Structure formats: structure tokens, C-alpha cells
Length: 338
Length: 150
Image (tube, rainbow over all chains, first blue to last red; front, top):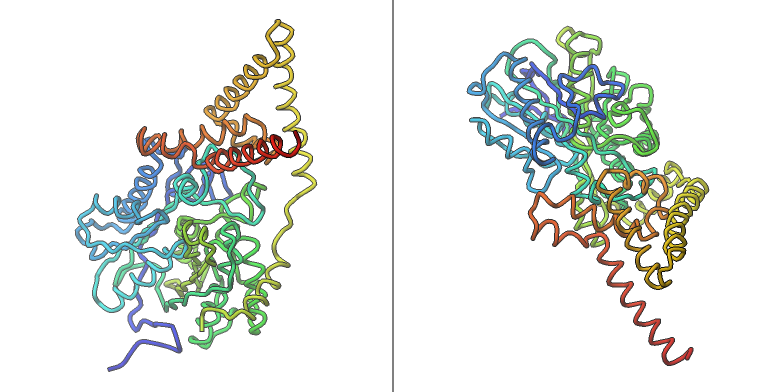
């Protein structure tokens, strides 16, 4: 039996799955950011007419999925799997979203790497002919994350410059066996890395080694150079993580600086309270679906590598003095015209 | 091997240190001084006013604390105090208004989880350690005063 694998960690597709639709829904602050006009839907308050922030996040996720289904021109009965994840305990935003649908559901947790995890698994399901359509969705909400990971939202405390601002955003994509849209060429599933960073307010430092390792493995496995990609898009490394990851990759002789963009640095105007940049599952989910998926559709980007990173800690593990393990998954996408 | 060994971790810690921005300590200290000072000026104003209205000094002090706690709670409720805290750090956290903020903000935040498991259970999430160790230290200091510095 022939396996569709390259190198240590990469899967390739003889029949490439197609990302036929992508949609994004964001909160007010993201709507005012540099990408504001690109999002499919912008709410002007963070409660979205719901009675709690958790419900608001579920609603945002549902809306993103509905928009993606509409763009793909398909009905939910045609979707064979729904893969979704978020940051909340027991991934409630995703599961409560999934109860509104009649689609076989797999809940994912990869922290802020969830969108890439979903894209990778969805592509494998479609590429392996286990599904005709797979829906992938991921979200984060600033206020639900804040109250779970940090302090009550009205508590006055000073943020440190290394901290990141959790985005209120959701993104959804539809992966199909055929159709028009960018193709998934390869996926590289990352390994958990832990370099002993213990500060939960410095996730960029914690995640940079995971990013560097996955990018390095992907390029090795595919025998490629960074220049083979028009864009390497990371999730939420932030200012600090970007700097460190460039240095780590340079140590291995790989220079990605001219090709690399970080979603965490694209979502907001960089004010002091944003800290090192945006973060959260919704960060790369919304930036990719709103900005780069259309660029791939239009052929402005021929080939890109989407690499989302996640910090896999919890408040409990940090309080017990554990360091922060991190993960990064990579998905290589090519435009239809390439 | 994905769990980095101690030597690798140390090397990484040194490498990443170069990229971590320093806290703006001078700016933080100046803001804390100004904002904390202004809060104290407001408190002093109430204290002097109450004393001028012929209230006994101990009563005036208790009344001033109550007024400042109310102000802290009120500013938390209308969504101002978190911004003040973000700006001024300990300048906003240390005065009694900051204590009010630390109790009222979780009480507001967890109202959706109900009055028992939400509001009342979470109310001292932030202030709890202050109360516990504040009480402990006050007992220790009182013992010192009673037996040693009498």
C-alpha cells in the first residue's frame, strides 16, 4: 500500500481538497482595525444581542458557519463533518454551536492553532475520500477568554507589554472534494514543544519554537525553500514571537523574514494595551478567511503556508508552576491558477 | 525529542530575553504617582469637609472610607475603573477605591452564574488574598506591639 507521506511529518494529497468557501465574523474592535472592511460581518457591541459573552461567541461562530455554507452554495445536509474548536473550557462555544446543526461533529482543541488543526484534519478527511464536504470553524471572544484565563473584565490592572489581546472573532471554511477555490497541497502536523517558558503573559516566547520546528519540518519534508511560498502566515506569534522565530529559523539556515506575516500583527492598530499583538483561535481564523482566502481565490497569492500556533497551558497548570507546551500545524495552500 | 533539556531551555531563555520589551517603568511610576495622588486628594477633600462639618475625626475617617469605596464601586459599575487601572497600575489598585474595584468587578462579572455560585462565591476572587494576608499581618503586628514595643 502506498502512503501519501513525505519526510517525517507531512501528508500530501494526490487529489487536492478545495477550500470552496470562507467566512468571518468579528467584534467591534476588530471591525475598526486595519482589516475592518474585509470581514463579512462586524458587530458593533461585544454581546451580539445575547445575554452572556459565551452565548455571543456561540452566535458569532454559528453566523460564520452559516455564511460559509451560503457562500459554498450548499445546505448543511450535504456536510459530512463539522470540525470546530475554541478556547473555552470543554470547548462550549463550538459544541453549543454544533447543537444547532444536524452535522456529524468533532470538537477540537488546539488553543490558537485550532483553525490549522481543523484545516489539516478536514483536508485529510476529504483527501482520503471520507467526506464530500467538511466544515471547519473556530472562534475566540475577548471577554470570555479574559474571565476564564485572567481577571474579571472590569477589574483594573496593568497589562504587561508581552501580553496579547484575545480577538473577538470567528472564521469558518468549507473544504470540498471538488469545486473552485484554493487547493490544499500538503499538511504538516506539529509536535508539542516546550522550552520552559512559564509566563502566561508571554505566549509569543512560548510558541515561537513550535512555529520554527513545524516550518522547518515542512520545508525539509517538501524539499522547499521559503521563497517557494508567496506568504507564510502565522497565527498569533505577536511581535516577540515573530522576532524569536526568525532567529530560531536563521540558526537552521532558513530566512523567512521577507515572506512572513503574522495575523496577530495584522488585526489591530498596535496600541499599548494590545501589547505584543492579537491572539486567540479567532485571530488567524478571521484574518485568513477575510484577507488571504480571497487573495488566493483571486490568484494574488499563488502559494501560501498557513501555520497556526497554540499555547497548550491552562490557568491551573500555570498556577502549579508548569511551563507552557506549544504546538504549530502547517497547511500549504495553492491558488487554482497556480 | 520535543521536551527541551535544561541546557536548551537556558539557551532559549537567554535568546528570547533580547526580544522581550522592557516594562515602561518610569512612565508607570509617574502615572501611578499622579493618579494615586489624585485619588488621595479626593479622599482628603471629603475628610476635611466632614471634619469642618463638626464630625468627630474617627467618624469622619470611617465616613470618608465609605464614600471612597462607593466611588470605586460606582466607577467600576460604569466601566471606568478598569481603564484607570490599566493606565495607573498600583496608583489605582492600592487606594481603597481599588479594593472596591477588586470586589465589585468579579461580582458583576459572575452575576450570570447566579447569586450563590456566581456573585457571592466569586466576589473575593481577587480581594481574598488581600483580606486573608492583611488580617494575618495585622494580627502579627498587633502581637509585636503588645509584647515588644509596648
